[in-house]
Length: 126
Image (cartoon, rainbow, N blue to C red):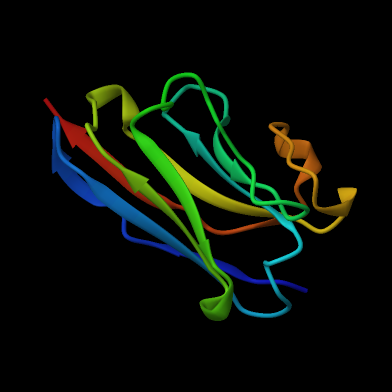
């Protein structure tokens, strides 16, 4: 059983930056795919960014490409999401997820992930 804990959310003005962290309590994240998803009120949960466990490849949702960066620190068993040039439409609860199956391959489908954190709120004011 893996426990994921997100941190780093908060309130920021448009154009500002935040860095989210997701720490895994057990196991190692170095060989599993990790993803960030978000869910805004009244909307479906959407893929934001992911880090492959089988390679160093990353992938981003269209709405965040060029603004967000996902990274991983295997020694700390932690992944990060650096969010720059934030917009009000980025306001959501952000979730970290780990995919224990799939041989480390990245997926944009939330159903592919086995473990989820509780989420951290990000609010961007206009």
